[in-house]
Image (cartoon, rainbow, N blue to C red; front, side, top):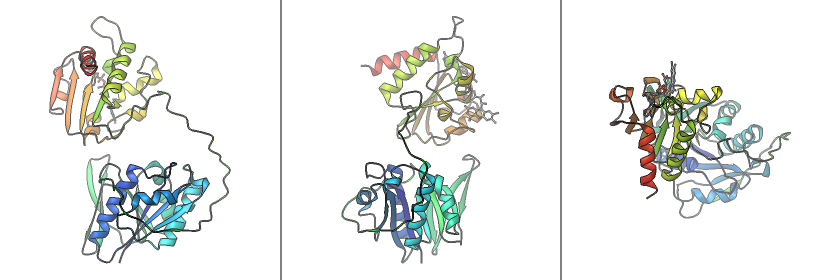
Length: 339
Ligand SMILES: Cc1cc2nc3c(=O)[nH]c(=O)nc-3n(C[C@H](O)[C@H](O)[C@H](O)COP(=O)(O)OP(=O)(O)OC[C@H]3O[C@@H](n4cnc5c(N)ncnc54)[C@H](O)[C@@H]3O)c2cc1C
């Protein structure tokens, strides 16, 4: 009989983030498939008690809490100690956690301390004849595999954006758990935003807008128009709320000068970049080569704007290819969006 622990970090305001609420749904659905499974929540943070309310109605027997000021912000030593205490107090055989940077950073260490096993980035959970299995992708989403393990506790981090977020209803009983948190020599003095000043990576946006190296290349008049490209792209992002991706060639130009100032390697989509999950994507001034388009694997509605009618997008990689000048197209799109 499995004891499932959902391990989540409380946000600074005492709420739970969307990935945590999605993991709650995954935990509830898995527990429903396992006869006699016990379902518990483990929450750590400066306001762990308040965060428990967000999990009410998801079938958790109780919420175990480690609440301490030093857990307000992510820090390996304190987070790992809090998680270890929660796992020990729960007697969990399965530990499910959202694959956020905070949990991903400590999960393997906590698993080792608990003499367990860990798998990350699961995209589905299932059970057959009482045996749990998890699905995850390998080799940058080129192969899908199913993993099951006998070793317990088994830690699994769950990829965000896969499960529906839980919406709380009712009450949830909670119990504080003592955790020996280590002395910390680090102090968080504040947060600094990325140099762009504006947040351009928006995982929840319906549209992914990808900028390619063509935006920085010499155009028909023999000149590059980088400032105009920046104005058009930022104008579109501001009006549409789209998330910004970039090809490797355009983000690599950062080190060479003359590149789009707000793009970093975090924006890169592709084989050596990210694999976003937006419903739709629009590629502009980007050739659509294979190493780039493997990053579009989960983007089902695809359109591209390129001057070249024989570019990669035309080789069956986009639903619609507009053979046009992206400077003109985006200027007109921005006009239309401005109403
Ligand atoms: C091992 C490996 C891993 C790689 N991983 C990645 C990866 O993760 N992500 C990635 O992106 N690439 C990756 N690459 C590089 C990839 O092969 C391409 O070189 C890169 O994607 C090209 O970027 P681009 O299309 O922006 O630039 P280019 O190939 O230079 O294309 C620019 C395009 O802009 C068009 N253009 C120019 N002006 C305009 C205009 N006014 N209007 C419309 N179109 C215009 C041109 O017609 C051209 O098609 C990888 C390569 C290797 C070998």
